[in-house]
Image 1 (cartoon, rainbow, N blue to C red):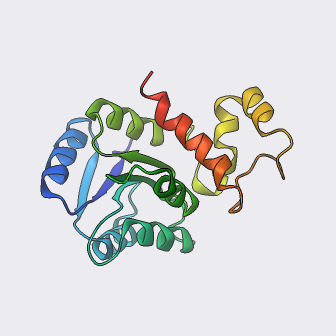
Image 2: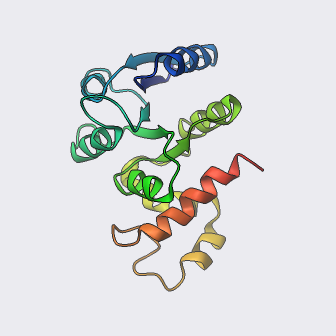
Length: 177
């Protein structure tokens, strides 16, 4: 099995050092970007399996990086876990609407982060193009009941951010049970 590659994009040195140590200890190949432009360059150059992307960074914000990655067909498969001290529902909704696969607020428990990374790099986690069926792969019957009567097949459209926000809260809460 090949070693999974993770890019840590954060401008806070203490967070970068601790995340780098933690993830290397778990067996991942880790690279670092200290601003949004470095993150975009590293994503294009290294094609990481997962990007841990801080929202508030110099040059380009994490939101801008996420939108750029999702807008580039060659990079769109990259999984993105946004990390931010901004825990408001609107920030979470914005990150998810821009195409982030998941969102964690700082401070976070290291065990929760390691579990989330392992989950996102697991074989069942959908590629971003298939993200609409992500919740169906976890609990098909419950998801169909929850989404009954919604437009389409339960897929999250741009106008249905509230539906996506409900799912994001469930993902965040799952690790805290």
